[in-house]
Amino acid sequence: MKKDYKMIVLFILPCVITLLVMYAYPVVRTFLMSFFSMPNITAPVGEWEFAGFGKYEKIFTSTTFIRSIQNMLMIWIFGGIITLALALLFAVILTSGIRFKKFFRAAIYMPNVISAVALATMWIQYIFNQQYGMLNSLIKFFNGTPINWLATDMKFWAMLGSFIFGAVGYYMLIFISGIEKIPQDLYEAATIDGASKIQQAFKITFPLLKGVTKTNLTFWTINTATFYLWSKMFSPVDTEASVVVPVMYLYDTAFPSRGSTGADPGAAAAVGIVLALIILAVYLLMNKVIKDDEVEL
Amino acid sequence: MGFRNKEKIPAHRINWKKEATMLPGYIILLVWLGFTAAFLLWILGASLSTTPEIMQGKVFKFETGLHFENYALAWSQQNVARYFANSLLYSVAGCFFTIVISAPASYVLSRYKFICNKIIKSSLIIAMSVPAVMIVLPIYAITASWRNAPDRLIFTVLMIFFRVPYTTVYLLNFFATLSRSYEEAAAIDGCSPAGTFWRIMFPLVQPALVTVTIFNFLGIWNEFFMALIFASSQSVAPVGVGLLQIVNSMRYTGQYGALFAAVIIVFLPTFLLYIFLSEKIIAGVTGGGVKG
Picture 1 (cartoon, rainbow over the protein chains, first blue to last red):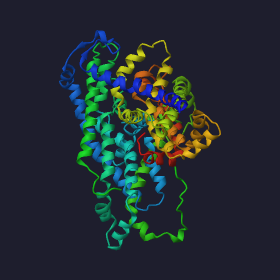
Picture 2: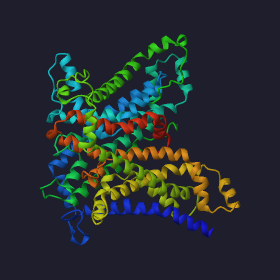
Picture 3: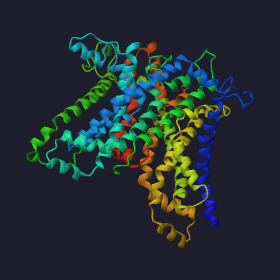
Picture 4: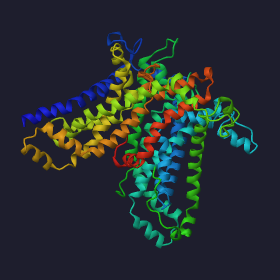
């Protein structure tokens, strides 16, 4: 047994070290940083100056941060409704006994697997291109006036649209797994009673998908709170207010671009804490509001 | 992708009435799929065209032939070869060492009772959901003090650490379902507990190891936020950050053909992986019970 004990320690130690070095220590330090002023990220703790809630005050009075929160909320609400609705639509179609189900499912999920930077580049450099882009070619084909999709007032929606295209597949898979757990005899009974496919969707499928909807909403919230890549791709050099999101504000505050001196690691840490609290709050709220108590699937 | 339709039935047995009620469904799926295929094909066409052809919207005419030199240009002059090699290094080394750390830990966590077992398991689950923004600032401070360590090593280590909680938690259920009789038989034959793990138990969970490694590979290959902070200089950047740099330098170079060739080169490895492994990947997304 003593030999076993030695093995247990040896086997678990690298994993515990990972947890401490990569997660426990950084989380605690980020939390502490959010209450201090410091000249740069690498400054030793000795040079930190206590700032109380000053950093939180600073970010919540920053117009860029407020704008980033507004953008995040818009992504969460509009993006969430469209993504989850499309995902549910595809899931219902794919589980209705359609042919080539596996092929369609794999094709819709595909953007989740390929490099998002490559995908975003395809959208920006081709689909939204003003001169030879797909959308404007279509508009010209129907004799419309071409739109500058990447102009300031359209950019946010262009970004959201392309992000949704890539995101739908993941949520669709979760919905499909939920639908496939619903017993088939419910549908057979409904069909015998003369219910149409659409009635079946509204009366059987949707009510029984509460549990997976909760999962999807939680993932969507995390996805939105940590949204970064698409904003960066749509404003690659200088951050633009139209697409700024909190993580981008955090990055710019912690690592200001060359020349500028405004690094404020404390404020960046405060942004991180705010985002973590948002995720935690939504997670707790989801578990309270949507209970999958009635039917355990 | 599932090109083979397993439920294929002879044509004369197709229930046309049933298929007709699903027509709207087919139309919606085909529109989505057609759009995806159209823009992927266009990108492929553009990667073989000259910049003026792209600008004039003459991508599929190939009037001046197929310009494979775009790929050569992207690969050597625009540094894609370097980014590609970096990504390959991060992904392969990351996947390997993640398993070396996670598999033994997962094994003892699922099969031995000891103090802290529960605490470690819950810590791993919490660690999985900690967003990167909560940890990057202190990690940057730590790694800044190791500035003489090569950047590639630092980023590889970070990627390993980043994948360990997910990998360990993913493997827990698979180790837990193995029969005790393997260990008992090995002990009777005089095999040490550690030997039993590496020689008998580890190979038994091979299917789970393959699935989790696919997800780790995709995760590291596509990592962007951490890469931008820890591996953004030209010599150590992975493909994602590298592609961003190519896009940013476009306004000076104006080589659109080469840009689209670079996009295809970055896109292709994970796309090919997906074509062969889509069933396994899709089963892993929902089957493992945890998110990648």
